[in-house]
Length: 289
Image 1 (cartoon, rainbow, N blue to C red):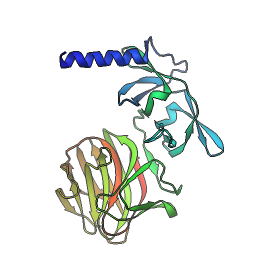
Image 2 (cartoon, rainbow, N blue to C red):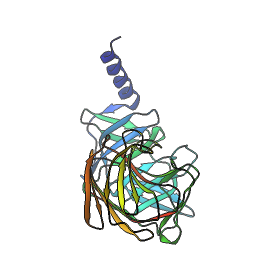
Image 3 (tube, helix red, strand yellow):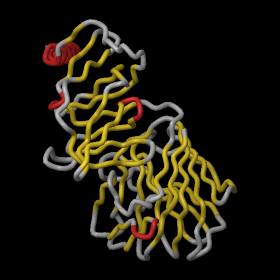
């Protein structure tokens, strides 16, 4: 069988498994664009009802979220027995999603009815919508740690006690296209802002040290410096670092002053932080679209 025929056969099998139907119904007229990722690794894009409610059990209460007000939903995060998470523009809420029926996703070629138990995550398209994470909640819901470093959100800021160069803290929502990332960084040595993260390994990192910033990438961010620029960063004092990301093109600013621009090897992924040798603090993280 040719490669083209094999791909077509796989698509037809998936469509039959998920049941293709007619146009999706959305009486409120507020369908939202979204991407549903299934447990078998498929990514399916289309439109579904934004009026639909998700009910999340959080401790002793149940909270309801309309899909049009949600940025992303993750069932079980890594394993099904783990907490489910709902990301809104106000932050991340973790709990247990109550039983929900299948999702009817209009792909433009018909409607696929996808059982909720086959869904790993949903990402809702929110053009122009940004969000802020100020770490005031004291928790790191929505973040994934890798390595032995200690991360905490106590005192309304994110702090790290580094234990290894490759240790990271990565936010679970994937970003692509054009956006601006801003965060206050306080360090006395190497601290990193990660973006375009793929999996648990960062693809690109802006390292911040007193007096300069440097972009590391090209598949080996721990040792391959792409370019560095002088920057007015003082040891132990917060600096407002901004990344204007447009796919592979990035502009770096510190306290409102442009430090430089560069093209990086990858164009989308997750964001996060890293640190090396000495403690650092990150605060007032904002993403604007």
